[in-house]
Image: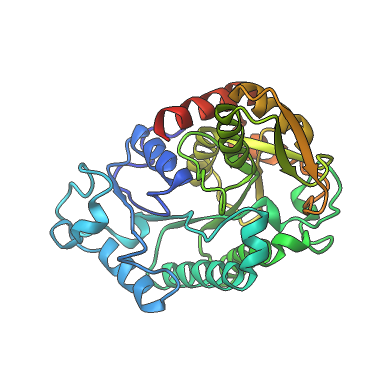
Length: 340
């Protein structure tokens, strides 16, 4: 890490109040970033072009004119009085409309439109405002359904994504196209990262919108407390997934923002592959559920396999995941028990 990189920088983290964003803002402050701004959707709806323009105008204002609601995430933010040079503004775009298989099947139009417009408009307006660096965070759902395993960045265009989350995955992947086009034509310094499925403390445990790990944690704990003899899981358990602990993901995003300057996409993952059946059994054990797991094969499995090749991240900016899955799961379950 470059100890002086964040000195004099002002950073906008969209989605900074969310699950991944809260860890990214913490990682930024740990590296000395003092001016960290976190827009909330209630104040800056990134689907609205005028709101995006207003966000960037506010972020480039002198300290006294930066709206309080933009500074609320960090009491130490915006310490200097002068307006920053636009080249010293960094935008890390994490905000997204996300959900599990059920949510993607129920709201494909919203997932496509909102994610597409947020990414395209924010990157375009960042270029127009002279932003110095832009980090776009995509999704593993952008990969083709039958991409060779492990997924390598060069395979991103070898087929169509898994159908249940294709609208979301394709919308996010357009930021890669935009990043490459704007770098080629304008020299805009943007990067595009592809994190695998995240998990950890502070995740979304709402059964209607959550991803697989928080959903299984909640279902397992509640089933154990009721003394249920059976817990239902979706699909047949055969698909495999890779999971990245959220703190490791945040470190990867910050490291890439500091050290990487290319629009070639980069995977962020743990390199560990686990079947949904093995995952469900591991979560049930950690949560104290001893009953039978019943597989509802009428529900979709999703993509057959997921595991990323993470060698590019290691080679280009020296990052690799550090948290073993068993330890990350233990911390996640402990957090949920304490914050239900």
